[in-house]
Image (cartoon, rainbow, N blue to C red; front, side, top):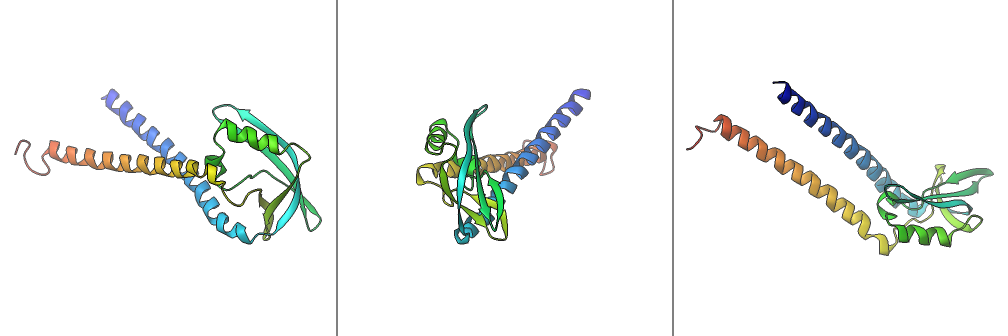
Length: 170
């Protein structure tokens, strides 16, 4: 009895954590998906790179900060491109970006005229890195489909086992 309750609690906990992670990923994806096409009408501004570094923990992420001024107000931005959580995922690409943009380097950025604090360095995803968000989307889709098929299969087996669709063995 206790073991069954513990297993049910473990499953429920994994489900809640998985659902929370999925919601976070989808929220970031939808936010970027909404801003991405709008950014093509954003005005450009000159910026200066303040800091670039690579953090090596679970992955190779880039800390990239630039400063720019719009209507006399100075802002700091750190977004390299949209979907960057999926794009800049390998060490070589990150090292290349950092080497090309040392602190003090002038860069052109694009900012949201309705909220100048929102900016991006590159409005497009470099073609050489397009495989990463596509691969991420395929992985998420396969996980969702696998979970759905497993859930449906488990329901069908449960109904067969309990005899809801007729006696077992017929």
